[in-house]
Image 1 (cartoon, rainbow, N blue to C red):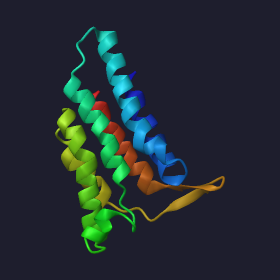
Image 2 (cartoon, rainbow, N blue to C red):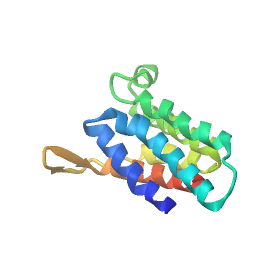
Image 3 (cartoon, rainbow, N blue to C red):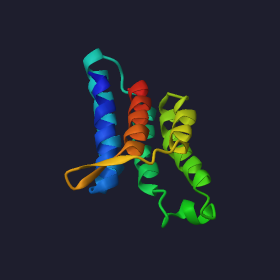
Length: 145
């Protein structure tokens, strides 16, 4: 059942990039914590509050943004590779604190890879970049949950 976090994080991340920002910023961490607590309740294990706080801290990273108007963009002098590296570290760090240490390596590398291809789904774009990065974030969260 916990595997459902991967498609949920992927869809919420993509929706948050296109039209409804809270989907990515807040619902990704909230759903992650909900699934973790559900699993603990189902298995009869104790909820690790450090994991809960770390997963909720993902909201801070996902709210920071990395576009042209972001603090990271200005701080890095517009060097996109550095902006993406820092943002990936920010997204991977809470996952690493929650228990999946590889998240601190996977997420920066995920944001460094660029896909320039997309296609339309109705009035929205299907961005392979978002699909790739948020699928990997979903995988990292799944490894925690």
